[in-house]
Length: 297
Image 1 (cartoon, rainbow, N blue to C red):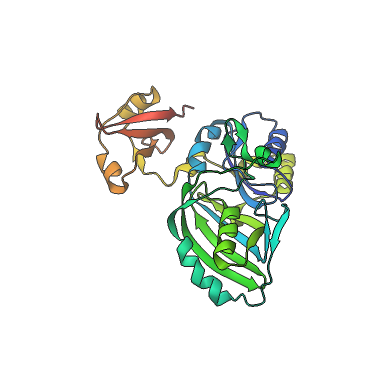
Image 2: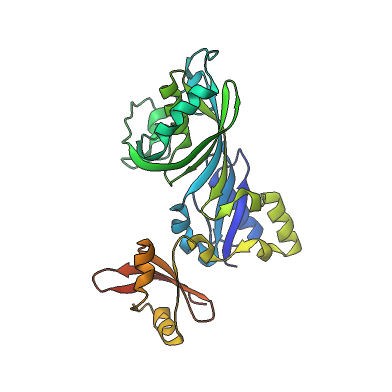
């Protein structure tokens, strides 16, 4: 069984918990997730099965979208509702208009400091473990991009935002930083991932629905092909002779326009009848496409 499941992760489960559940339902060991979701968050968690586990890294690199609810007037040490309250402020004067005026500063490319209570490794140990041990940590800022940031609802002191962003963006940090910028403080109190790459919440299935499909023998109806995770890359369709070379991992020339059109370094490769063959990388020195992962039936 090979493909990608678009799972709607419930709150309270880790991403690894979901993987373990899917392994059991499918009776298959080769299962992995693409893009971790915190236990307190819910929503889209792509699960790669069989050969599709080889494309998980590309799916994790793709953009994400979230629906986030922020609570103003209360700051916590973890930047979310599970942390210890470190400061409170009255928010009676806080308005939607004022918050709207702050949002443009958070759009575009920027440097973001991750939460101290995160899984980022510091000298081989997750930052959250060292923070819980009482260490004073100073995490380095990382480049992120926030392309969309709109207010969906304002029910004082709670603000609901619609967010589209790059991989590596911490919505908890965004909540904290917006709270700091406002002067009132804030923390993240609810988070739903509505999109991960091409996979959307509207088309996701719950673990209960997956279990029902397993019982009925219809899991295949919920599996997306592995190349679904690569839709952001150009598609190269090869003739029979070139396709045969690619199946053995050999480089091939031509198709330069695919590289130039979007300045892409990667492409998905198909044979002349539409079968997904490989992921190829552009070699600028040789002016050739080099297969980096070959999918052979």
